[in-house]
Image (tube, rainbow, N blue to C red; front, side, top):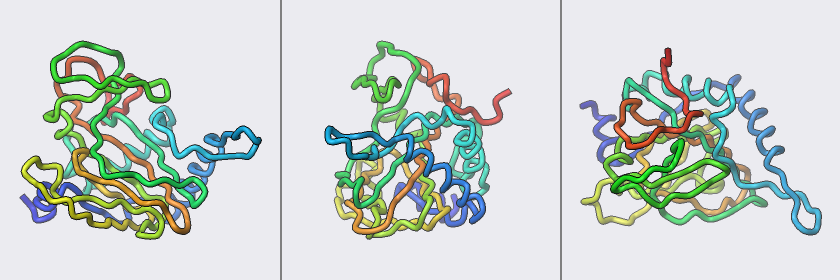
Length: 233
C-alpha cells in the first residue's frame, strides 16, 4: 500500500489538485451558472431566491462525461474499483445570501430504482422524485465520494471540516480539520467520514459531489437506471 493509499485508509479523505484545468473550469462555471438559474424560485413577496442545490445531475450528458473524466484520472482511479458505477451527482451552491451551516454528519443514504424489503435496509425517503434508502454499513464502506470544487475553497467560503479517521468505528475523536481545495481540485472521501461546513463569510462555493460504487456490489435491489456505468458495453 502506498503512503497516499494508507493515508486515505486511515484518515478517510485525500485531496488532488488540478484534476480539471483552467479552460475546462471556465466551461464548468458556465454550466453551474445555468444550474443556479434553473434553481431560482420566488418567495411570497416575489423576491427571487436560489435553492441550495440539486441531486439529479446524472441525467445530464456533461455530468456523465465529467464522471468519466474524474474517474479516469490516474491519481484518483487507484482509489476506485475497476468495475465502476456512479450512483449520483449532487450540486451544492453557497453564497452569503444562499447560506447555511451543515452540522457534522455521515452520508448514509443511496439512490435505488425501486423499494424492496431486506434486512438492514431502511430509512426510505423520496428526494426530488428519486428513491433513497440507508443500506447496511458494509455497503456504505465500499462507496467513494469525489467532490469537484469549481473555485478555491477555504475557511471563508465553506470548505469542509472533517473528523479524520471517523469513518472507522474505533475512532472516538471529534476534533475537526479544515480541508481547503483549489479550483479544479477533487476531494475524495468515504461517506462514513464525519463532515460538515460553516456558513460562508465571503465569495461563493460551488461543488459537484459524485458518489461512486463497485459495479458488482451485491445489493438486494437495483441501482437507479440513470446511474453512469464505466465502460458500459
